[in-house]
Length: 212
Length: 289
Image 1: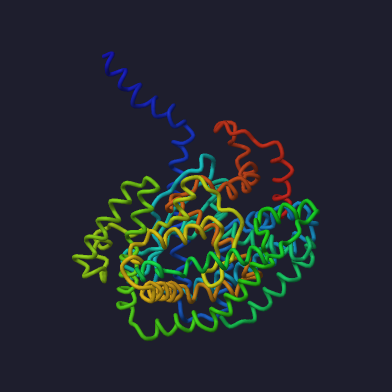
Image 2 (image 1 turned 60 degrees about the horizontal axis):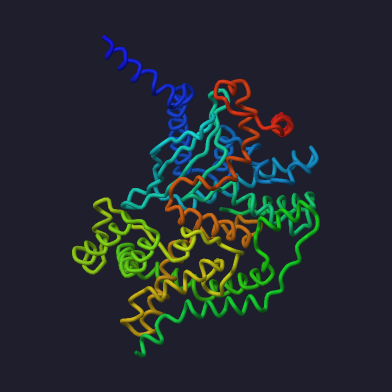
């Protein structure tokens, strides 16, 4: 009897104290994070795979997926770094709109140009200890043999509503890359946020006009 | 004797170029404004004006020579042939990879490198076919720049090498040391090792044609984008692709969001809420509207 009691204690209580009750709950959440990425990834790849759409339609679709699955304002704020705090509300508003356009133009075309029948499979979901997780996935072309591309998705789940805050391709963070680039551009404008936004606008207009 | 003296001069030439670039460098003056100074320090690119000039030169070199060669290479050879060439190039690199596996104390990876080399050389007909890879023993690379990083050497400042592209003092030293480690240089003459380097360059470029075009097209500052990509890629290579504990930037900088979102459930998880989380999270919610 004693031994049985001990066993129960060992089996039930020990894991709870070891990992904390929070992480048991979190396990359930992470499952959802994996499904969220798998679902979103499948839809995005499907949208890219469709040959019978114009650039406008593809961009529109991409914009919808972006709004639904990504915390764009948070990523935008991250990419502006210390200048975010300096920016006026008007500058911020203009910046987030331009940032969204730039992301749509960049990734809609970028994914289209390299797409070759790839599929996405979620491999593992790792908790970051709070209410976020890193969903590790692999994107693989049908004929690529064993050379898939490693893509990790950093997600947050406010109220069980998942949002992506960063995408890492082969360990390279898209958010950090964008932030570093913006930092260089702002630096070249001597810290003038309006001048930076003008440059950003020029770029967006140019990309929207291009046929890709 | 002759081959030994002349072996693989290219990386050493790169070293000389780098030294010359250092001497000729007109270093940028650090800004005084605190935001600008923070950005300047983060870029860690004191030779930026010189580096940008070399980058322009490299782009010219790419447009005139490397890119057309890579495009032609892809036109002429079918997928299977190109993948076999790539396999052979990788197989020939095995001694350098092995040496660095060992120097980094990575015994499992060292055994993998030996096994792959043996299996692919024998069953893969001199490395033409990646037989070991088909059995789940995937290839990896290592170089002396990574070994130095594992030993605790920092990357130093950003350095744009002519022809060789993005680097830093640590990786430049690595490039030179690897050329000494490589036994190929002791067995064949310089034209052969040079030819090998050239084919490696063309092979590498041919795999990045579309992505690089796209990155250049969509970048506001291509140079800064490449600088960031290079650094992050090296970080990832040094960690051998393990999910990074030491990229603090995203998790820390996204913290303000985290704090905001988790406020109601936070006490249970026992996570301290940062003092300045409040004003920052207000900024975000203000923005969300």
